Every structure is written in C-alpha cells, then in structure tokens.
Length: 144
Image 1 (cartoon, one colour):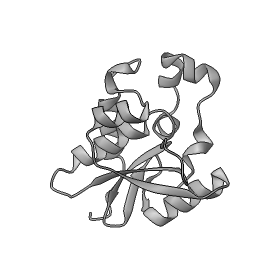
Image 2 (cartoon, helix red, strand yellow):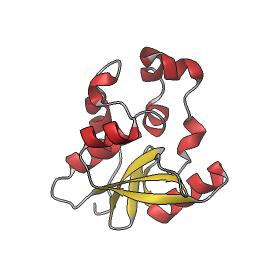
Image 3 (tube, rainbow, N blue to C red):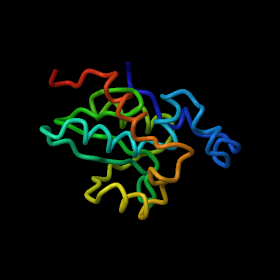
Image 4 (spheres, rainbow, N blue to C red):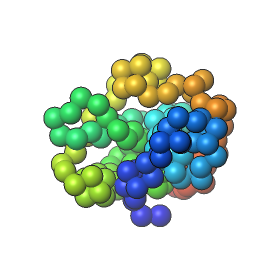
C-alpha cells in the first residue's frame, strides 16, 4: 500500500469526544489519527530483534507532534504499512501544505503520551494494543 497522509483520516468532532465512536472506525483510520503512537510502539515491540525506532512529525518549528510511526533502516511503518520514510514524510507534508520536521522519539510510550498529550493505552474505549499487534501482523516487514 502506498503511503497516505495521516491527516486524510482526522477524527471528526464526535470521534474526538466519544471514544466508542472513535474505536469503531476502520483500522486504518483508527491508526492514522488517534492511535498512531500505539501502532508505532506495537510495531517496535513486535520485532524485538530489530533496531526499530519511533519517530514523529510536526510542522516545522512547532512543539507538538501530530503523527508517530516506527522506523527501521530507512523504512517507516504506520497506518499505510511499510513505506520508504521519505515517501511518508512527503505525502504528509503535501497534505498539510507546509514543511514538516521529523522528531526522533527517545522516551517510552507513557512518557511520550504525557509529553505530547496523546492517550495512553488505558485511555481508549478498549485496549488498543491487541488491535495494534494484529494490524502490524498484516504487513510484511521490509527485511522479510
């Protein structure tokens, strides 16, 4: 699957305010907007033998990131599956209409959520980790 911009799946006002409605979105929409960080950490944890990092993007000069993803050897994994990281960055910048900067995430999931105002796994309508692990498993990694 070609990289798609996370912003194309932004949650509506009702999806932002009602966790059950947000949960009931299709997997790709759920992991593009609202649970991208959960998916990134699930990907990293699914392949402990690989040096998978977590990165995120934000508007150039901004403090807040809006999309997190997993990275391995120039490849990025997010709601679109595995794609070359430059492609993921380009489609998101094109969609947003302004330059984005990549931020390497060096903290754990709990710290990331606290620092960037993202929901932790326990703040969803149901536990998103099994759903994220299953989603990761749908895609063949680039080393396969």
